[in-house]
Image 1 (tube, helix red, strand yellow):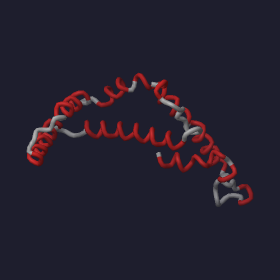
Image 2: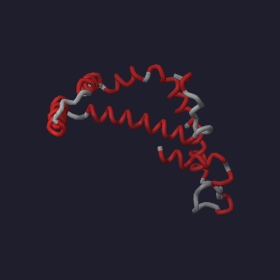
Image 3: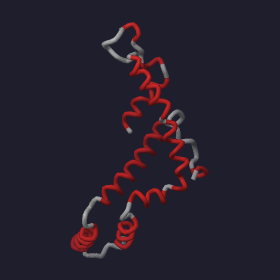
Image 4: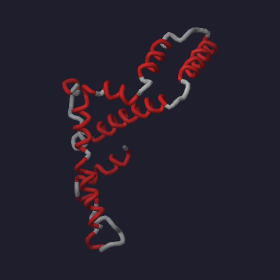
Length: 141
């Protein structure tokens, strides 16, 4: 997988790509967990097939793929662990690249350097340090 990625995806080098990649990953996980929470997935798939045929007059050619997906992801956590095994090291590296900005932010919060109520002379200005440019990107994740 790493050979297929044309450029490194890290928070420092490509923050926008990092954010979009992590958003895609989170949306995939949320979708699979949400789909597993539907109590009667067979009934939902049947209603979809009937509605599609009624609206278009044709049978959905991708219904077999939908049924296979629903059967494969009946236990989504276990299935996603199996699916992401080849890229688990890559995701680990992505998550480790988040550690330093969060660590710096927690140190600044604990020391009170960003507090408006503390000493105004010691207040840090976000534009002076490169790390602060990444804070809005972290907030959007």
